[in-house]
Amino acid sequence: MRIFYMGNNWLGRRLLEWLVEQGEEIVGLAVHPEEEGTYVDEICSVSGLGEEKIFDGSSLRDEETIEAVQNLEPDIGVSVLFGYILRPVFLDLFPKGAFNLHPAYLPYNRGAYPNVWSIVDETPAGVTFHRIDEDVDTGDILSQRRVEVRSADTGRSLYRRLEQAGLELFRSTWPRLMAGEIEGVSQDEEAGTKHYVRDVDDIDEIELDAKYRARDLINILRARTFPPHDGAYFEEGGRRVYLRLELTEKD
Image 1 (cartoon, rainbow, N blue to C red):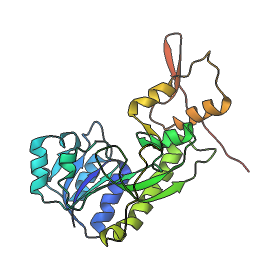
Image 2 (tube, rainbow, N blue to C red; image 1 turned 60 degrees about the vertical axis):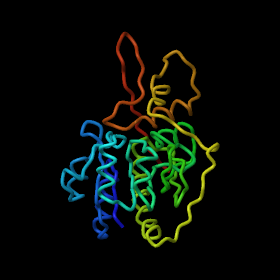
Image 3 (tube, rainbow, N blue to C red; image 1 turned 90 degrees about the horizontal axis):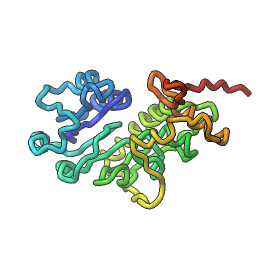
Image 4 (spheres, rainbow, N blue to C red; image 1 turned 30 degrees about the horizontal axis):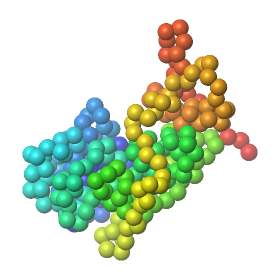
């Protein structure tokens, strides 16, 4: 199977490593621009591909890029934590389909920051391997796994467990996909939840004179605790003060 791989972050790098270790043929690669991605250099290195077969993810809508990818004759597309929406004309390049690993328990938390919203909205957390269609995280589900949201979780600690669960889910699903043993299950597009990157702006500013239910405020603060990234904050005296929550769990 000739694979066109689209990946970002630690999990994107680790699963590409695993595919290479399995002897899979990686014929092309798309990554985030350096200023927007993480582990970009490592992912490129692991692929073993020359520069002419590595593409900026932001260019996948361009006719020139689409033609170049088509010339690679990929059979299948694989996306892991890849932050670009793929157009139907690009998806049509893969006769065996394109598939995505999303760190959410679909149909809950389609889109951005599922680790945050599983805590804030108290929705199920997990990972899902699904077929990519023209919308965001709405394609047929091939496999998924629940991940517990713990009382002492922060956005970072939950994210790390989602990464590990995603690694395990992909490894167990891939051989079955290659053997043609999986029938995808369609999603109810009216069910579940969806969030955009900008949605965290609505929760990040803590109004000092507002009334919050204690549970809701704690959930916001811990969900947005992901150092070194900025998270929730309050403003006073013309200055912005960022908040991080430290939680210690005891029996």
